[in-house]
Length: 262
Image (cartoon, rainbow, N blue to C red; front, side, top):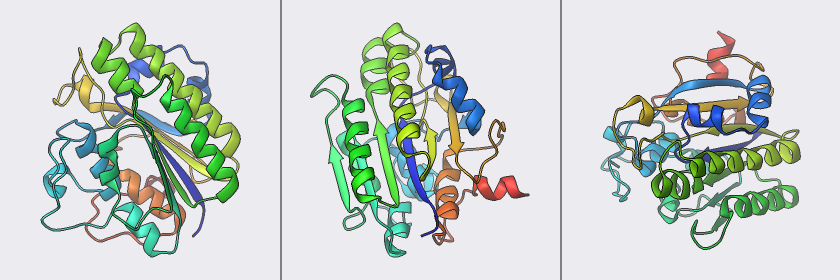
């Protein structure tokens, strides 16, 4: 392994929601990261298809997930988790939505924790604290922290851009700040959304559904640099590049770190 990485996905986070959530750490994120507020989601802009694209760097048309129901790939593509595992790395995953387990295949994770979003208040915070405890004790090479309350309790229950939705983003960014403060010296931190949303839904090609914020914070990225032409497909190649992990020939994205060198 080269360097260690934490990937944080905040489900359903729109760029304008991020800017309007009132959390002062948003400005600090933009100052300390290479970032975009115009990143591209996938078609369909739905949670499982988008995350399968994040981890496999191929479109839903290629991996075959077009809804939140998992189906095996007709022609399998190795995921980021598989590539890290094959290279001898250790990965952990923390998630609040049960179908998210499908982004990793059996045998690829050294640790995982699931807390259903509706089982308690502030489950995103609970997962963040558990992840940080594990990081401090075990120093895994890669950690995936998935926060779902913005999507479920914010967008679907109350509506995108509602007061509750903005509060969920505010709380999620508090969790990001905690990760940055406690693990940022040892880990590159990547923050993304999977899709946005409108009214109380998502999944369309509307800009509100398709535009997402993305932040890349670490020594490979120029602080404050605005990125363009970035999509979810670029995340796995970027992490593989940072960690010096082989990239499968089927992956369609490109490393953001590599793009910044050119």
